[in-house]
Amino acid sequence: MKTTCLHDLHKELGAQMSPFGGFDMPIQYEGIVEEHNAVREACGVFDVSHMGEVLVTGPRATEFVNYIFTNDVTAAAPGQCLYGMMLNEQGGVVDDLLVYVLENANYLLVINASNIDKDVNWILHHAKDFDCTVTNQSDDYGELAIQGPEAEKVITNVLGLEIDDLKFYTFKIIDFGQHRIIVSRTGYTGEDGFEIYADRELTRMFWSRLIASGQAKPCGLGCRDTLRFEVALPLYGDELADDITPLEAGLGIFVKLDKPDFIGRDAIAKQKAEGPARKIVGLEILDRAIARHGTEVLDPDGNVIGTVTTGYRGISVDKSLAMALIDARFAALGTKLQVKVRRKIFPAEVVSKKFYKKSYKK
Amino acid sequence: MEKIYYTPTHEYLRVVENDEAYVGITDYAQHALGNVVYVDMPEVGDEFSEGDDFGAIESVKAASDLIIPASGEVIEVNEALTDNPRLINENAMEAWIIKIKLTDPAELDSLMDLDAYNQYVESEQ
Image (tube, rainbow over all chains, first blue to last red; front, side, top):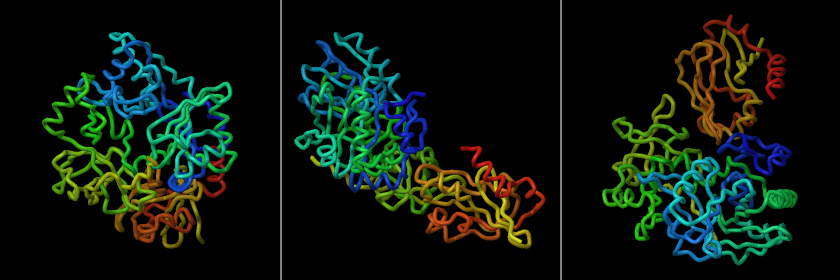
């Protein structure tokens, strides 16, 4: 199993470790609830060095990235981050990713750890028809996510980085001694926050300083999932997959059908015209029972109409909540449904999947 | 006299009188789970054989099956856990989950006592 550059430091902190995306990753240190609340109320730091980074350069890099990516990189200036997806021909999601628009029409694609091999093969395969160079830099970068309402203050005070001028979904490149780092105002928690890409050595130094300061709580992937879930951010493998389209996942605004052709465009245009047959919805379980990934969703007559993609007892919202991929005919808010958890059936209701309000600093 | 038995899946069974016993999870188990957010309990009258799962306990992270240490019929469920599952985190040995009437007390011989359980936990770490 792969490890990140901070692996030994997690063990020193007594982290509970578990495999994720091919890496041995910290799931929690003190506890998911404590870490979750630290991010909502103050500041937490996550090791997200497992994420993959792919650099695309060359004369036709712009055309190529726009061909494999659903969002429109020609509409973005250097210094901007764009969220979007790579699709297959059927409109299913190969991966969701962030594209960092660099100077000179270069692009850094940040992809999910669990998909690095699949994505790199996919990108290389399609790059053959374009005059561009694709470099998998996943092993070169460490990445920290510093998240929460106090993240800006903590990064300024503890790491001495000037980042207060960064707007939401923008980044800058900072020279730090001999090191060059990327800092963006992005995250996966629904709170204000930043992500820092640096080499392995500097990532270790930043992590150690943040932990030693006591101002950023070490946070594991456990609370990363509860935080993103409460604000309805999708996780690849749950709400997104090779056979789930962006329209089904409610991510249509990140698919620019009016730009030049890209992989999956026709399938999405067709599905948009017809209306998707399935949709990801929010569910409130009207009981304390928790409907986890894979739980069957039933209509009032007991027919299976879908499955839960993620479910938790909310931490910032004290309810049993789930996101579920269901038959679109049952997707209207207020629809009464049921979930089958082990042997028992519990009532549920379709609610907005934005269970908790995001507080981004725009 | 009360006697407490333990399983490799971290349940305890506390025998009281007339072959009646309380079943719950150990302090080690509650600590490993973290915050308990839901306990899926059976109903009074349900019958289980040794090794059956009789319900589940859920932490924030995941659900774990509850395994019955010995065969019996459920004669009481701890209703207090319905609204306050965190009682298990506060005192796992007090916050029993079900009370059963043992149908084959001889099965108890194959369970661990406290010393054996403590050694088992240590060997697991």
